[in-house]
Structures are given as structure tokens and as C-alpha cells.
Image 1 (cartoon, rainbow, N blue to C red):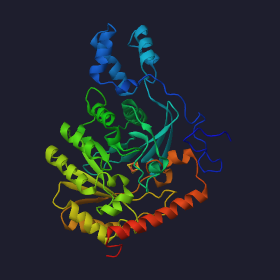
Image 2: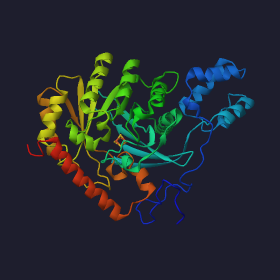
Image 3: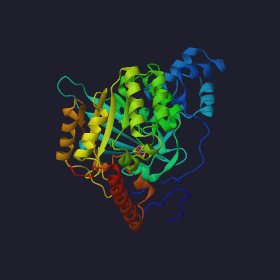
Length: 412
Ligand code: SF4
């Protein structure tokens, strides 16, 4: 097997996952920006600078955002000379090969996308068929970074480490990919959530630019209320978004209200403590009138106890808040398991008892590794069993210490 490039793991030929891409793991980046990262104004300015009328920019935008054209050659409405100049200056798509896997009878699909430099990112599409008066929905979960530096121990992406920030176009091209994919069967993307690989607010400017393009009727054209940006608690990012007063939903990856335990589950808590994060999120709710979503990944015996439920109820009662309880998606490097349905229901009952809207989510796509980072981790290669065992033991020790420090233990 060839020696893997620095910073990558070799693919394990014994893995159940076949080699997904033949391309080398990491290579030089293409210097041309992606066309979809340009705002409508920037596109107009480019055409004006090239002596072209404004309607040409609109023709191009129509092709880019309807996701019809896969290459500049297909843009027949534009003169050949302009097509050639565009191809020299921009890429029409920043995603290379994409591998799509299905689960839940086709209702969940996950894509692993190869970027121009060989890095991989993931996006997941979850379809919800029409029920009663509710129309069909298709929620797309997209990545904002390749890898992630936050290092939440229950997350496969956190285990991979951080590679790089995504360009604005690399973020929105995930939505364009699925628009094209769904259009083949007469469906469309109705919601976008920034909950894939990466911490969105550590790539703040590009994430806000991408959200703006996704909600701009001249670009992707989703309603702002159909976009959710999730953060593990980067307070400057929450404040920056609050200042813009958008109508996006803010989601906080809370996972526990107990500070010492949160130091373990979301290491960023040491920098941005949970009470301050919730205060910043409450400001967002006050300024925008939008209810904040708090996400809690439920891990058996770690953060799902009656003590945790009471702490979360105390922290969130009286706030404009909605809580999502999501059973943990098992990942190879942790000894942790998802909480039982009974535990999750008991937790939900404690929150509802103090008036907090709470939803228990189903874990979708376990069989295709739909948790953030799982496919990319498998592609990166299976770590040796002794390394996995060491990592698991370390987590057992650390979680025991965190539960001691958090006080109250696991007893109810
Ligand atoms: S859960 Fe989110 S913030 Fe935490 S390591 Fe994974 S991708 Fe990063």
C-alpha cells in the first residue's frame, strides 16, 4: 500500500467500506473560485467589467442556481468567448466525485463529496413524506468545514480533526448537488441545516455568505425561515448573526446543561461556558423573535439521567426554546451507546413539565453512517484496534471524572 500523505490515514483494505475514490488523498487546490460563491451583485459587476449586458449575468445565474448546467460548454445562451473567459476565471462546480448511499427505504441519503484538493465532506438528505395537511419536506444537512477542530468525543468528524474551512461555493454547491439529484424525481430541497461537518461559526463569514445565497430569491431561493445554523456555542458568531437580525433558526448543540460534563462533551465549553452561550442565544431570540433550537445527543448513562434532565429544565425554562432529543449515533471510537427510548421519554417529560417544547427525534440512516463524519472517517481508514481501545478507555476515565465534577452523579 502506498504511504499516505501527511495528515491522512491509509485506507484499510480489510475494511467493509470499499475504496470510494481512486484519486490521491490530498493535492494542490484549484485557484479558481466557484461561481456559486458570487453574490448576484458580484456577478453583475464581473459581466459589466467584461463589457457584457446585465441580462447575460441573469442568464448565467439562472443556469447556476437551477443547477442544470454541469459545464460551461452547456451554457449555450452565452457567447463562446464569454464562456471561455468564465471557464478561465471560475469553476462551475466545486464538488468532484460524489458517492451517494441510501437508507430508511430511500428516505435518507448521504453523499460523500470529493473536493478539488482531495479532501472529503459529507451532506445528508432526509425526506419526510406528506402527512395530513403537512406537505412533503426534504431537509438537507450540509458541511461548513472539512473536518472540525472542536473535537466533541461522540462525533466522528471531531475524531478526524480539522482540515480546512470550506469556500462559500463549496458550501452552497452541496445544496446545488441535491437540487439536481432531487429534480430527477420531481422533488426539491425545502430546508437546509448547517449541521454537517465543522463548526459553522468558526467559518463565520463564508457561512453567513452561503446562508444569504441560499435564501436569496435571485440565487438558491429558500425562505430564510427554512435555514438553520447550528453552533456548539461560538458566542462571537451568535452575536454577529444577531446583529444581522436574520430570520434563520439558530440551533445550539447543548448536549448537557452541566458545565463540567459539557467541558467533556463539547470542549469549546471551556472557552464559551454554557450559561453565556444560552444568554447569547436568548438575545438572538429576543432580537429576531425566532425560537432557538437546543440539540441534545442522548448518550446512555452519560447525559440522559434525571439529574441532567432537571439541569436542562432549569437552564431553559421560560426561554423561547425548543429542545430536540436525538439518540446518539454509535461511532467506532467511543464506548458510548444511544440512550434507551424510555430514558429519552423520561427526559422529555421533565422538560415538558416546565413548559419547554421538546421533540424526540428518530436516528436516521444508522446503516449508512449518517452521523456527521462517519463516511469520511471510514474512507480515511480504520485505526488500529489498540488505538481504538486506548481512545475508548480514555473516554471512560474522562467521562467518569466529568460526572464526578458535575456533581449529582448518575443517580436520580
Ligand atoms: S459535533 Fe459538530 S462541533 Fe462537535 S466535533 Fe462534530 S462537527 Fe465539530
